[in-house]
Each structure stands twice: as structure tokens, then as C-alpha cells.
Length: 240
Length: 194
Image (cartoon, rainbow over all chains, first blue to last red; front, side, top):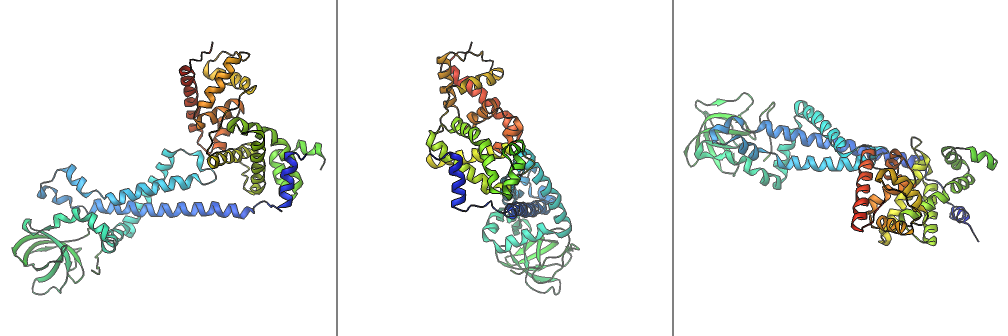
């Protein structure tokens, strides 16, 4: 009767089994690390967008709007990006555990590693590449669902009665006037006789701006201050 | 190479030699056949035939994955890890709850677990043995597994960490919880250790 050892050896010989090549395992390990790098990049970008959203919140308007700090933060919290960040941390943990020695590290340590990497690279990409701004703007432009989700945050700028509107400039700036299509696609004549135009703002077509002023009539708004839609460096021209 | 020479070779060297010449795999099988067979029985409680089938699958997998062996690990940890994974996938495939096989092995278990649980050994007591078998069979798989690796296979925390692919701290926690569950079950079953 065949022993277990003989059975195993015979099976190996009969089926001509061969050990899998070393490069196959190396390739797998490489792919896992490559995947981890991609996750780090994605989470850094998500974090950059979180920073951008907080930096771009209208902190100066809080008192004017009569909102408490807690309520204001709650309203401006970039929930979508925070959820994406949490999801990416989960995926990173799972993928990290697939590396050769990844199992030796506990979840809190792995979470700290990915959070730190996200903060460092996220801050750098926000500071030097303005990636948060591009992602936020791109998401608002191309993802109707995202636009819907962020609508409550923009709602304060759909308030002409309270002197607040925002939207896209749709005409040339001429005789201290220009046309603006607001977030609800309504067209306004914006007067800017004595208004302050922030240096970051270029009054030209396709620029997105926020305006503080006074409603004159159904279609006319007197601007007191014109701010960039997204604060920070650079002027954003967008298709709409 | 003569058999005597092979006996002196480390597992790691034998693994490397097998990659050059398949015949060396015989020695690896010889070294681990009984150990793994015992481990499978302890953890999965399969009958002789099923144990043998599973053992074959394990060694085939070991042979196919020899190039994946990481020399920073102990070979025994690596081969036990493959055995552990195969038992788990066999368990999932067949959806049968692994049963603990006791018998004489209980003596070793009691001897080793004694310090951890303050159990006074009374291994000659057949009733006590039966009770311990029942308690072990009742434990959650994750707890039974660490108790078996620690107190029957006598593996270190680091080795258990490598076998189960869990952090060493998690292994220590699992062992502590396993001991507590063991005590709790013993209490529920009114088993008293003198």
C-alpha cells in the first residue's frame, strides 16, 4: 500500500508539477505595493480637497449669517471627501496586510501611517499644486450627484434678499456692469460702481465669483464686494 | 547526498535544494508529515482518510509555492501557515465545524496550559479529560486554534503570529481571551479543576 509520502511524490511526478517561478511572487508583491502607492496618492488628493473645502468655507461670513461655530462647521464639513478618505484607509489596511510582512502591524499603526501620509502629501499638493481646488471644482462640474450633495453649502450664496449671490460671469465687463448667471441659472445685471473687486478676481467671461451687495430689483444687483468663488491663488476659468 | 547528510540539513536548505532537485522534497515530507497530520487532527478533527487527503493538498501547495518561502521566517512557521490556510478553506468548503480530538493529547495540553490557567493536573482522571475535550470543542475556532498552537504545538508568540498572519499583540490578546473563554465554559459545564 502506498504511503502518504509516495502518493504526494507520485502525484507531483504524474502531473508534472513544478514550483511556481519566483518572479510571479515578486510581481504580486510589486503589484500590491503599487496599489498601496496609488491609494496613498488618492487619499492625499482627498485630504487636499478636505483642506481646500475648509479653507474655502466663508468663515468671515459666519457672524453675518448669524451661525454658531458648531453649526457652521457642521454645514461646511466636506462629508463626501471624509467618507472617501475613510474608505481609502480601509482599502489601504486590507492591501497593506497582503504585503509580505504587513500582518505584523496592528490596525491603529497602519491607520496612523496612512493618515500621516495623507496629511503630508495632501497638504503639499494643496499648497503647491492646488489639487484640492481642481478636484472640488471638477467634481462640482462633472458630477451632478456631488453638486446636489454640496448644494446646502452653496445655499448661503443663493440669497439675493440677504445680499449674497454667486455664479458665473457671462458677459464682458463694460461700463461698470456685467451679467451673471447665478447657481440657479438665473441671469442678473451686476452693477459695480463703487464695489471692491478682490485682487484674485478677474472680471471676464466664465469666471465664477461670489458677490456681496444689495438686490435692486428682480434682475439687478448692486455689488459691494466681488470675491473669487474659490479662495486662494489663481483664477479659475471654467466651462459651464 | 546521503540520507544522513540530509538529516543534518536545515529546513531552509532543504527547501532550496528541492528547487534544484525534486527528490529532496521527500525529506521535507518526512520531517513534517507526522507533525502536520497531528496538527490537522487537532485543529480540524478529521478522520484518517480526510486528514491524509488534506495533507496531500498541503504538501502539493508547499511544493508549488517553494519560491514564495521568505527566509526571514522559520520554515516551520511557513509550512504551518499553509496547513492552517488549507484547514480553514477545507472547513469553509465543507461547512463543518472543526472538532477537537483529545485522547492522550489532553495530557500535553493540560501540562502546558496549567501555568496559564492554574489547573492542577489530574490527567489520569478520565472524566476530567473528557470534560476538557468537550470544553475545547465548544471554544470558538479562533480561540481553540491559538490554544492548540501555544499549548499543544508549543509555538512561540512570534511563530503563532507568522502562522496566523496576525500581529504578535493580537495573538497575546487572543490567547488571554481564549483562556478566559476556556474558564467560562468550564464554569458553565461545572467542571472543577483542583
